[in-house]
Length: 397
Figure 1: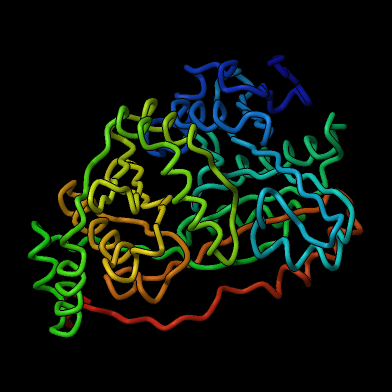
Figure 2: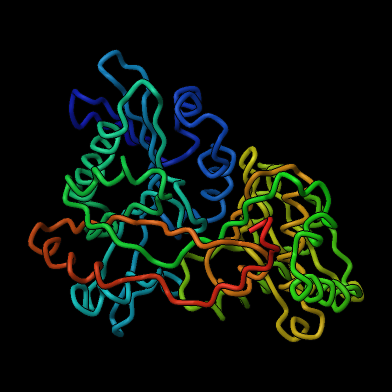
């Protein structure tokens, strides 16, 4: 890889790299700390090593006038082709593509800058220190993405810049992106379980449920009792990597929209690089792997992220439902305050206690006229409707 070092302006200074191996680690770590595992160089290195060639990566460190690092951003550059009328990167990118491509992109190719992580929901693309005001930090980020979009890429011109996804508590600052002509919109919610402080064991959790949902939970545990659940170590992940990929792709094929596609090597790299910060549970039936789930630890919070399921076994043995309760037990055992269960299956996740949290994204087209046109398109995007099924007694609701 060739280092890309660019000083686009004198205030702020920027250093940009196209490989995580070139990033100045002390400056990056000074900015991002250890709060977000998705911004750790260990995670980013695992992802880049597995997916280099499918996705282009950019890492930017921002400096103040004293040449002190004050912010850092992680960009994935995705390619979409629409020769047959579909917007594609492996599979569908997300619902925003369906709205935009039919009106604006049509059958042309498009490359999109994504500040964030297409494989994980949340604020996983940007961080800044207390040495800079939030509004100034977001302005720096927006301007750097605009400049990047104007650069002539070897593999084609950038069409869009997308920033994903911001939690409600951040919107007071991130909404300043609209001052830079980014258009805000929302897609499906993130289902989040807040761990009640009285839950010291999984039994405490079950006792906090109404009779109906406690009976349901115990029914799932009974149906799945023939499953052997193992926290897989690196050697076990390597041994089962092909099956892991097969199960993972089975879930992607059933998803209404996808943000991107991993491969078997990515799971191996993640376990190797992250160790205990990445848990991969294997669900075995008569020594056959019929499912897996993953959790990323972010201090006192965790993300339940990728899963894989053998759908021929799922109904009889309640594989996916068992995973949801195991996520809860994991959060309690690790004394976490929050387990983020992600999008999809909102009603089912609500039945284990997760609540919906709206998240906002921002998009901007490189061309100012086209950017004006996408405003009404993205404003028409809204989260899917679903039924909430709160499981807890009034005292725990």
